[in-house]
Image 1: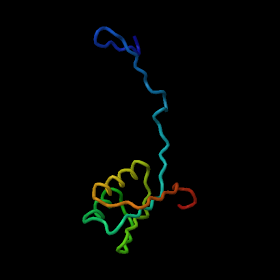
Image 2: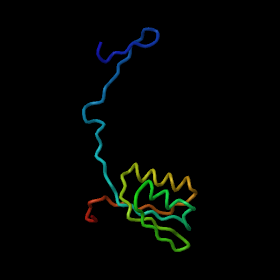
Image 3: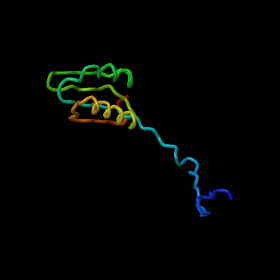
Image 4: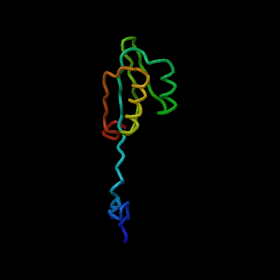
Length: 103
């Protein structure tokens, strides 16, 4: 009965277990540069540093550029979510594969 699970009404279903290595993913880190309109909302710099480590922030009044970020895809998504939640308007995201001649 390995792999067969009884369900309501006596109907049986099959449970498949993932193949070995099927869930192992190669984590790819990327150097990221993010440009947003205007200044960052209050407190956002500190929160980014707390969550993502040292982030270089350059601001010229009309735009803010975040750079020196090395993130995996989940980290980039989390940072973009944080910017979205803080009301920042993202203008551009540029990524290059870490280790592609930039380390």
